[in-house]
Amino acid sequence: MYVADALASPLQKPAVIGLTDDVAMSSLRWKDWGGPTARATGRLSGTWCLPGCSREPYDATLTLSGVERQDAAAYYRRATVEPVRPEALPPAAVNVQFQGIRLMVPEF
Image (cartoon, rainbow, N blue to C red; front, side):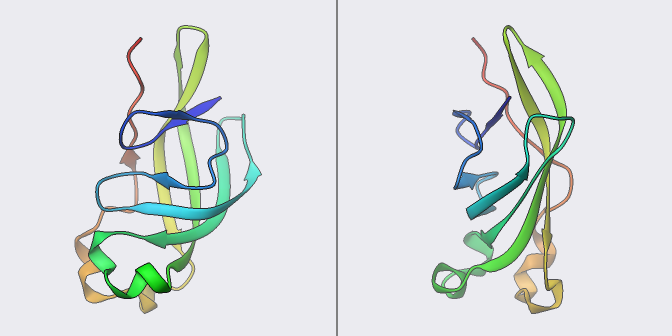
């Protein structure tokens, strides 16, 4: 099972992933992987929260879903990011998509 980052690089249980041009997760600790959903906790950051979150990213949960088969491999196609304390996010966060993020699947 794989997930592709914003550059379509195939990854397995990544410690860091750029989900979009604006949303990234780091320090990922995977609780589930390989089933219909994968779940990890980690640190949320992105262009919308700079410069503050480059020093202090926000705690969040990442859920991957929507498994799609591609040749001999399977990929998660959707991501949802749930900040632990959404009220702590800066005002610019209201313009950022955290739910139902469409992930790329590499073409071979």
